[in-house]
Structure formats: structure tokens, C-alpha cells
Image (cartoon, rainbow, N blue to C red):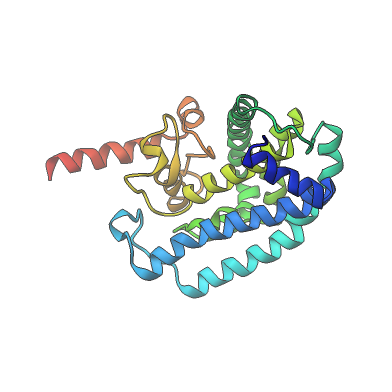
Amino acid sequence: MASLRESGWEYLITHFSEFQLATIGTFIMHESVFFLSGLVSIFFERAGLFSKYKIQKKLNTPEAEGRCILHLILYHVGVNFPVIMFSYPAFKYMGLKSSLPLPPWTAVVSQIIFYFILEDFVFYWGHRLLHTKWLYKHIHSVHHEYATPFGLTSEYAHPAEILFLGFATIIGPALTGPHLSTLWLWVILRVLETVEAHCGYHFPWSPSNFVPLYGGADFHDYHHRVLYTKSGNYSSTFIYMDWLFGTDKGYRRLKALEEQEGKQS
């Protein structure tokens, strides 16, 4: 007897072509996960919920949030969707498949772990490069317009940056030619990770409190609120790359100072 997961997947591949699922389906899935998760931090700000967990006390104006949403819609439709459409042949060539049976969970988990590690490595160096003077001024400064980030700002960036750092997200799946269901799971987890890193809140249940070497919102928020030449914390998911190359020294000094002040109070 087919599992619920297999039955659901069988319905999809029976009613839609692989091209439709890999392009339109991927885009709809990404947009749904991104906006549903990204709007949560705006709701928290507007409703004044969980304010004691907010990393920065400054609030973004509704106008600034609205401008971000409008730009995101334009960028996603004008940049992300065409990229998804045109990249399908390349993924297909590399072995992307959508047929049954679905891959075993051991294969899915191992691929997802590989994607996270590879993405973090590639993203770190690309992000550091974007913080050089010319690239920051002409490209990456768009992403840093919001010194107080909220979930949706995670994908608010110059179109060139979307393509440049987006490469870090797709290189893993492109190399391994995964099952489409694995690709979807990777996109969902990557979106949730970057939205959480930009949400502006450090909760007791934040992943960084439980997952070793995970950066999270507190780690990345520091990157947004200091000068670009001194920001550091360039990694997307983990903290070890910044530790290895000494680009988290400012952040670690700040945390040590906060810990010392906490003991004295």
C-alpha cells in the first residue's frame, strides 16, 4: 500500500508534467513558503508581540515594509521566475527526476546536509566579495537598506545579487541531480533558514539555541547593524567559516561584553 507521501506525489505527476512541476510548481511553492513565513515578523512588530525577544528595538515603518514587499514581487516575477524556467533544462541534464518511487529518507537527508554545507561555503566567499567597496556600493547596498531586518528582507536584494548568491543555493542540487521532491524540501528549508536569520527576533526556541554551529537571527542581525567594512558574519547558515577566517571577531567581542555586563547587573 502506497504511503500518503507517495500517493500525494503520484497525484502531482499524474495531473501535471515534470516541466510544470519543476518550474511553476517550484515558483508557487517558494513564494508561498517565503511570504507566509516572512510576514510573521512584520505581524509581530505591528502587534507588539514578543518585543522582549526583538534584537533591535527600532521598528520599520509600514511604508518601508510595503516598499520591500512591492520590490520583492517585482524581483521574484522578473528575475526569479525566469531563472527557474531557463534552468530546468540544465537540472534535467544533470539528472533531475520526478517519477516514483520517491527516494529513501537516508538519501534525502544526506543530500540536504550536503546542500547546506556547500551553500554555506560558497555563500560565505560570495558574500565577502560583495562587501568589497565597489560591489557593496553598486549592488549589495540594496540588501543593506534595512539596517533593522525583518523576515522578508532576506530576499530583498539587487537583481545581480539574486543571481550571484542564488548560485550558492542551486549548485548542490545541480551537481547531484536530485529527485524533485528533494529539491522542493531543500528550497523550503533554505527559505525558512534565511527568513529566520533575518526575522529580527532571538527566541528561546530559535534554532541557534539547539543546533551546533548554527548562526541564526542574532548572528546575522549583527551583520546588518554595523558598517559594511566591519560587519563580518558573512556566512548564511553556520558560524564556523567566520570563525575560521576571523570575520566574526567584532561579534564575539560584543557577545563577551554583553555577557560581562549581564554578570555585573
